[in-house]
Length: 125
Image 1 (cartoon, rainbow, N blue to C red):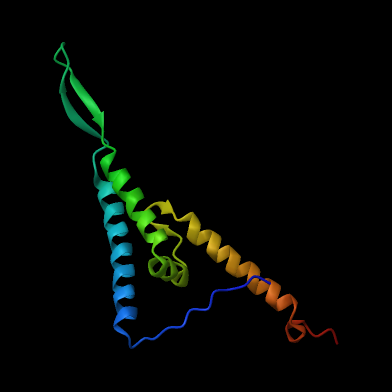
Image 2 (image 1 turned 180 degrees about the vertical axis):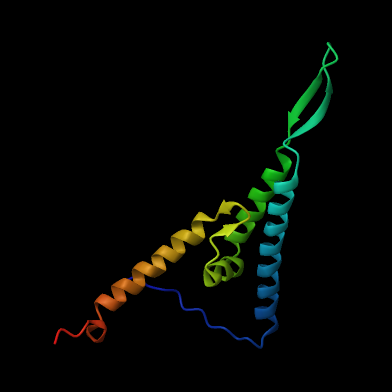
């Protein structure tokens, strides 16, 4: 069976609430970045060429900001644990693969635990 890291929670401590606030802030920033990405134009006006035609520039900034926000959520232990606890596998349209992998690992651990538990077996009488 896989070894789990046991986290001791002191819900009355200032540090616990600081970490929670930071985790939810990072998740909200990622949600806001997803909203900006959904409404952002795909191309920007980049001026005119020698024939007077408009030069279109691909607008990559909203996508880059969203990727950065997702990386920040995954890198923060508290924000990541909040997503796992809520079983939120998506922010915006994007699948958060790290959360999916953690949830699958948790399911595998649960099945492994239950298979080793004789009380879980069905009654065959």
